[in-house]
Length: 403
Ligand code: MLC
Image 1 (spheres, protein in one colour):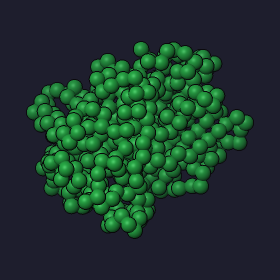
Image 2 (spheres, helix red, strand yellow):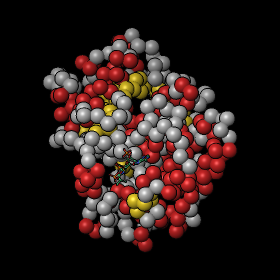
Image 3 (cartoon, rainbow, N blue to C red):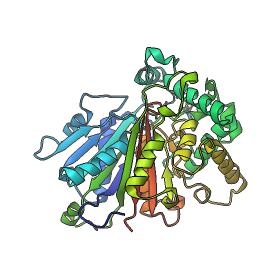
Image 4 (tube, rainbow, N blue to C red):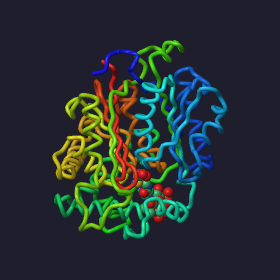
């Protein structure tokens, strides 16, 4: 474990906007979230020495971070460095780890990470036109909608190779809806059943509408700082969570044909292994998991990668948790399943590349004991995972309470 030395880097504050459909531009959502994060710890935008932004789909810009920093008046300024990170939906976690390195090795004392998008603002056709382009390649053989079709291919691989069932896939959405129903900001207010998920309109061969990441608008921000910054600003040194380790790995932008898929294309296992190594922890040390769940197979593979279930058993694990949740309505969901207490992409809401921010923010709330009715008792360490493209990038960060 890291000592309380000058090398300790903390996630000191988080901020976010509502996920309701808005007419605001992504950059405005980012600014709203960032101002909420800075005011929570009594600092100003001028205190920020570094900014990392992830690009939006609704209003993309050349050098997104420079655009955002200029729009917000963070630039021009001396000694401010900004960077755009593009690892798809893994972006926020990649950015969190990059911010840690900026503090550790580049002498930046306070770094902001921002993400925002407004994909609900786009018409369905326009959203698909843009989304289809992101993971498209003529050799992929993926029909529109390209992203759901890509995940569908992986779901079929998982069914063929490991015997994952249709009910196990649907259970992921049902379980996430049970979690979301207890979060005031979540888009999904009412839990759904496996039967309802299976009865929703088909989008691809083994993927229905309620098994797709839920399109949303929204912005989110993180503040990462050194102990020196906290001291200078008179902020208590134990504020927030310590970033204790992380790992990343990559896969292809689009999956091979079904018959050619093998385990080589996946990257979450390697990213998690590296993160556990750097943080010097194992699955038994993690009290909360913020796992990417844009489609059920992503969640199923994630519970296996982090070690909550053996390889090929992730679907069974989630289905058994669904039955346990339904059979025990008097129990708090987080006492049955310490995963995505906010409801994830499938049920909380998914503004394109923003959602891994929510995994991090929920981990922050759990670690700082501010998760309200969703609080898991005594959270000492939390794991957050972001996935980009169609299993094309995995970033895993482990946070701790510093004790
Ligand atoms: C959709 N709806 C949901 C839902 N998904 N409701 C509950 N839970 C969900 N998970 C609702 C919508 O709110 C809407 O209701 C209605 O269903 C129709 O949805 P739509 O999106 O307006 O429909 P349509 O235009 O027909 O498009 C359907 C779709 C699209 C499946 C093609 O929604 C889609 O592509 N979704 C996936 C988005 C996605 O892939 N995101 C990136 C994930 S990959 P109402 O009442 O509002 O009409 C990733 C990695 C990365 O995260 O790098 O990005």
